[in-house]
Length: 251
Image (cartoon, rainbow, N blue to C red):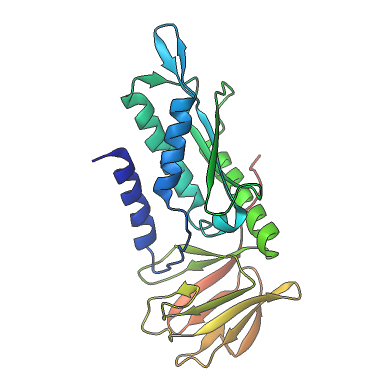
């Protein structure tokens, strides 16, 4: 199986392994992979007895395109690193350090376009947790600057999607079982159009849309409620938690 085929299957497993489906980007992961591969080949330098290629890659896309990747940017960038490192080894090339890939938003990049910058860096590798936080902070910046909304997370507390998270990234997010919702929850307890989460006046607000099994916040039935970090939300028997988006680099 070709490297890009393995890469695409990995990404499909990420999306299919959750009850939440929100991946409507016009850019597909394989397109990013092809750009990375081209940047790697274009950056080859013949040295004594070997061919040196870049080890640091910056994949740039328009912020509005990147917003659709919000839930998957970290595992996607890590998988890209592993795939690209394998390609480099298979072709007999070498690098001066671990392969690193960061995905960033840049308004100078046209929509539906990917631009990759590659360079050789001999600096000390950062720990994986620090790399992940840098990537998460970039996602936060892109969402905040492109939508005006400070992102939040919804974490599934029970059921088949337990511990999976969804990033709230828009001023209005529709929630329900119907496939036309922004956040699709595949639970029979959830109505087709169950609730709406809206950011306005500096706060997040939840509104029940006349659902069959109702909505609760911290155990209390609600028609409308202001959401605060740490609140627990129930749609029927499905439990979720409203959480801050993790930003900053650990020290």
